[in-house]
Length: 107
Image (tube, rainbow, N blue to C red):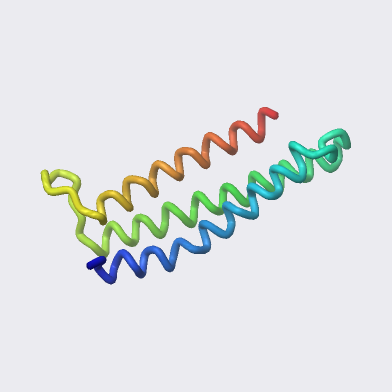
């Protein structure tokens, strides 16, 4: 049985998933498609993508921190549970989003 706090955390992170999906579509539209040949579209697209990814990182970290505080999870104990896995993977997602921002800016 999955604890209710994890179900609530999953519902809150649906916004993160939506923003990430929109960011991926914009990356395809502005960076991979022929629109990248127009300098103005490329710069505008990069600005929108970086802002959206930055907000996604902020939203993900703030929701993960709230979940971490509400569940009183301690990484110092040997017992590993679903809450620790969700928190860990949420922070890993934030690191990958940060790397994606750097890749978009360098492209």
